[in-house]
Length: 283
Image (cartoon, rainbow, N blue to C red; front, side, top):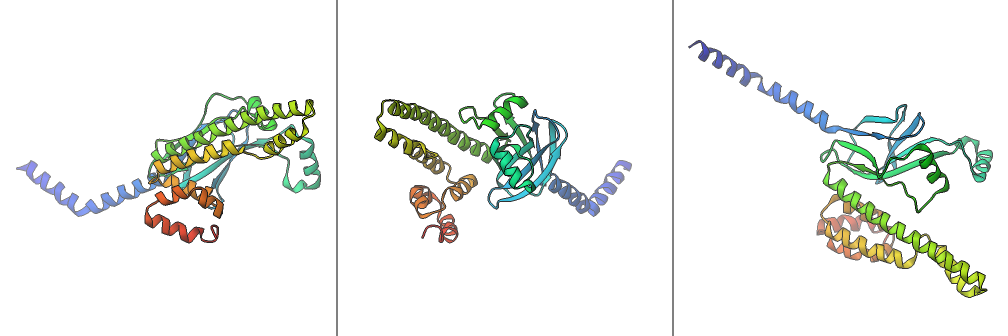
């Protein structure tokens, strides 16, 4: 009998105040879900600096200085989308053009080393994002690559999370990186061919090679990359990632025609929205 009375009392108390308990847990869960944790390690001298940019708007959304090589920071209330994270630190070695620029525009400050990558962020998919490299780089290795802009020795850096869209975006970055390396290797071979033509006084052929090398992408490699991009985008057309990639790639009528197969694959409501946003670019 006594136990029944106690049970009845607890039931009445719970019914009376349950809305308070549920409200409290709702607020706590919402607060947790809005927090994004960015963690990792960077083997450079401290302090170094970190900046986040929303690539859709171009806005800097977060900035901080770090006094430890290991970091785990909390960032709040960022909308989903593609972000760029930029690390920078003091540069002791300067190129002649850096010195000239600093002499003319000292207000810009002394040049720094910059290391960056992009990733897809969505706190509904994942709350933890971790900086990752393909191997452990020390500071000298990073600075040599960045100072000399060694294109055939890229620093393979990603931001990993459990989110499916970020994993998909990482696959896209790997696709681009593979073709970037292929492009550089073919340009290296072309440069050797150009030197051969000059050495044997075949100047007309050397000029053709030189014109090809003046472009950032060789035509054949660029066309192959676009074909692979289109296949990738069509295969994953219902992902939010694809719409943002498409927005970045299509900025002119030529771009629109180049990626027309992707446009045609979007649902009608997405195409209507794109039409209103791209009407100036695709005229």
